[in-house]
Image 1 (tube, one colour):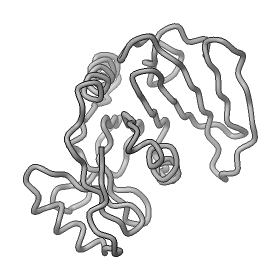
Image 2 (cartoon, rainbow, N blue to C red):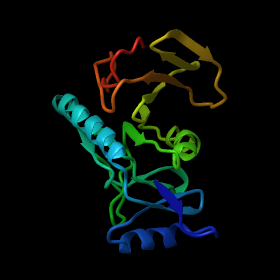
Image 3 (cartoon, helix red, strand yellow):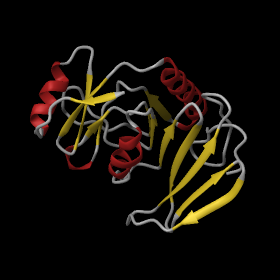
Image 4 (cartoon, rainbow, N blue to C red):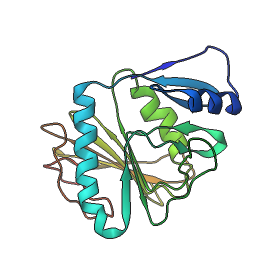
Length: 204
């Protein structure tokens, strides 16, 4: 859950000062607006912990590491976020800010809610796809996982009950999107990709 802190636009410097001085609250910065991240619900934490635990187990032999929502990530154009799960492979690269911000994530995961759905599916999606290092962006809920992958041509979406449906995408930098319903929060199984955990019973 997140709420806008101030109605006026805030500078990057003002945001960094606010976030550095915060003790228990974390703040995100998107397009000149500061968002306070409120405490998460038990279902939110369950999905986040399950995804992170499964990923950590599978990526450890590949010289990758995972971070929780305490790791800030710097995006293009001076935007800052705290994704629910972050994965980086190889040496992590940080800014010299306080706290340091990661700049080369390969996988970002957001556990969505009613209050964050629009930002997760629109604002953050657009911002995340500008990262050169990013390979996948997952949007997870207790009932589904939305998985975005690099693709040179189009979006691809598939579910348990239908064949993949493909539509043209407008973004210059193409990705492939997969939507997979699940039975319970955090159910996972392997898929043939570098990050190979999504909900069970997928036909993708």
